[in-house]
Length: 405
Image 1 (cartoon, rainbow, N blue to C red):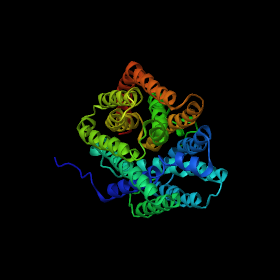
Image 2 (tube, one colour):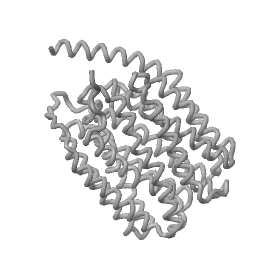
Image 3 (spheres, rainbow, N blue to C red):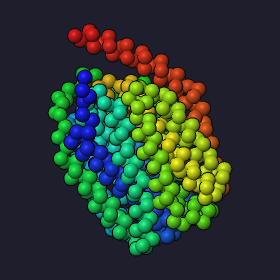
């Protein structure tokens, strides 16, 4: 039997939109702590507070985004979210004070969180069912590629022009390209069926996937610490002033390689083992980063963390989608992304506080410890819980389908 086509026009457009969304995000991420410090003379804990606002609003928005994506035409929802995400970049350009910048940055988290949920749900819709696990795994390549290129370009622009407005304008233009590209997606129209059940928590958070969400929160915490304080730590403690871009390139090369290498495992349904491989690699990477503070430790950790996240992320996303009904895909996506955001925001906020009072060494040791705890939780509980629930959910779904027939 001939395989259904994976790389169809709609899937390609969804990938391009995802690339532009994350490119505009990662272009600024490693440089914003430096921007706030140099432009507004912000303290370390103030930097953490300002940057965590973005993630906090994304965290609040994502559960509602999943509900909206499941309840209304997804393309319309996606375009509204992308337009708001695109237009708020203009606020960074006109912000003349720390307070005003903090307001724009915080508000920006809403459309970013909603756009990532809407676009990833759109990707699931345009994928042929027989290639879904594989397609979800490859979908992340677009943001992996963006995370490889964007920080390098951002750091190059900063060193060459010494003008943050150029960075903000670049992010504004790229986000605009993503919006116009998304307008060309032509998804299969699906009838929106009004739910006969009362609005409940399950419409905003996939409660049966709570254990996956909790585990992902630990890993998001570590990424929040690393991605936001990497550049300033490298500059102050290791004397690495232009190596952040190289770190992200190595990390993203690891992400891309592991997604491609692990794609067969996803296609064969080996989700828990794929996730375990990634979690163990990431644990070694995060620990090496702070345990061996040198050029070798710095760059090797980037490769290991990239390899780890490239295996872990698509496995977790497929795991939660596998225990969701067809009309819960948006909710499932928002649940796993919300849990990542919660950890991310806590990592940014606590990372800034710990750095202010105890220094960056303590901050990154905290990061490594949290990842080890998350690893123990996955091995000791999450793997077993998912295997049992997945088997139960599959048999229930089959019985329901047979009854309907």
